[in-house]
Image (cartoon, rainbow, N blue to C red; front, side, top):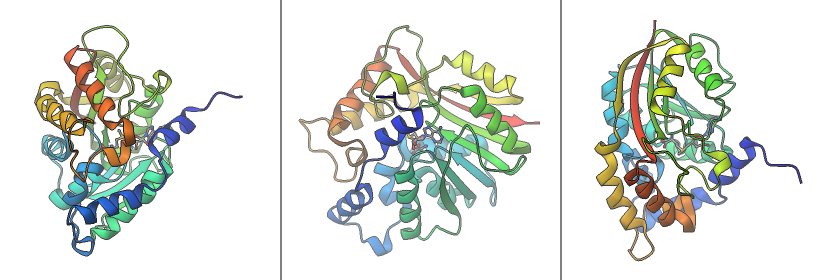
Length: 280
Ligand SMILES: C[S@@+](CC[C@H](N)C(=O)[O-])C[C@H]1O[C@@H](n2cnc3c(N)ncnc32)[C@H](O)[C@@H]1O
């Protein structure tokens, strides 16, 4: 049998069937009135990165988003970050994600929260963005590069679609300061052949080489670690997980995946970095 492509691995890993039904059933069970739902109601599931909604708001403040900015969110997932940006910063967001199921759910949650005029999601590949050069004020990647092997191509695309003067906003899981294989599974990968974690220096140098200039580069590992540790403990089998939570996405292995993230962070095998870069 032919080996699976990275595209297939990513879609299989993230794109579980029935995701929208699971989220809506859990939302009702949690007492959310769906006709009146707000973006934050879905955040425990749809802000799918370390630091959750708080990290999205921190990043947007760091990047000094302006009202009306045209933002491209690459690897937009379930659209949680995009909806937060629309609600809190009044920007226009297009999301592009490789996982078809995620785009369908992202558009539906956005419709339900009344934000469809300002956020739309399309299936597409970060390596070949179906967009014209110099289109966006802001390009945003929030924990969507871990599955991308060809980071040079991805970053060249970021640079191409940014307007001159535009801003690239970055939050990624990177390698830590200790060598060694990470513990798997983690939320972004079940297998070693779909996780590509570069060192902070290597990725920053590559971002500069594709033509961007850095304004902020920050190790944010400690900022979100304690919160993540608490979240992981709540996700574990022995505890009663919150009704709305990452297990809706990650399934039975959610507890193990989050426990492994905590261990990988504690052992210095992974780190979390945030950055803001400019296209001159
Ligand atoms: C951990 S999730 C993060 C989602 C979202 N950024 C968030 O923070 O909520 C990683 C996302 O990257 C997407 N992704 C992975 N490889 C991609 C690629 N080559 N092009 C576009 N999206 C990709 C996955 O489908 C997934 O939705």
